[in-house]
Length: 315
Image (cartoon, rainbow, N blue to C red):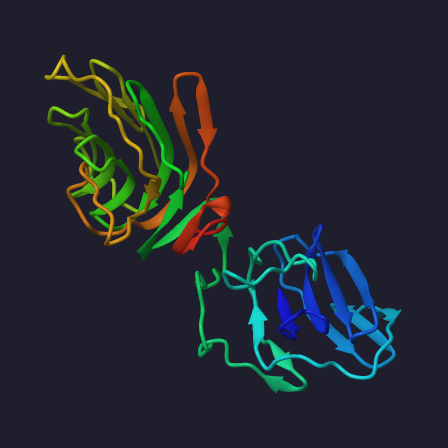
């Protein structure tokens, strides 16, 4: 998405995606006009040219015949700030039809013939590199995290988390769910093995995989399950189990958000032993509790930093 607008969004130019097609919208102060391209959400690079004049808006994609529409107004009265890819928090894009950030890549952006240096923005948030070849999943660069279920998640007596991961780092955080006290669940990579930690309030119980190192850059599948009486861990079909040595304590009374790939410095996590953020790819994440089996969609996370939610570099 590209946006030029005044403070009240009376005059604006927006270039973005709508239903898989490029959409150019503009208002010179006397009513909006817009045009649409053909479908472009095919994973390939496309060349887009947009023009706004006093009389018309024009949109050309991949050298095709321009799509045009008439517009009324004298000139475009906008602020000097140009937004690329999305809008910052606090800016309401409802009037101009902007509801989400661009989940894709931009390059060779120019405005009125001047090439923009995208490596030196005035500010940026959750902007990562594009991948020459990508695959399904979410990429974590090791510097941030994803926050889901902002209002808090209660683990309780039974819970299971399943995911697939690919990494070349021997340490990193997969998942952390905690409370203000000691109750918590943590899933992490330590010395190239998966470690599952649970504290129901009486003390930490840990379960660790064994065998070949899992930081080999290949995809691995894991399922970590907590019950009242113990823990089970499955890594690529190999099963591990540990009994709960505290039978009087069977429920993890957590109330904090779910953190993936890391967690903020201001947040305490009682069942994670490493501080290193996860660097690699995660996919097919699911969190299950009793009859609820929820897929975790990072594209709709409450907060993302250092995460590309819908793309992983191909191995």
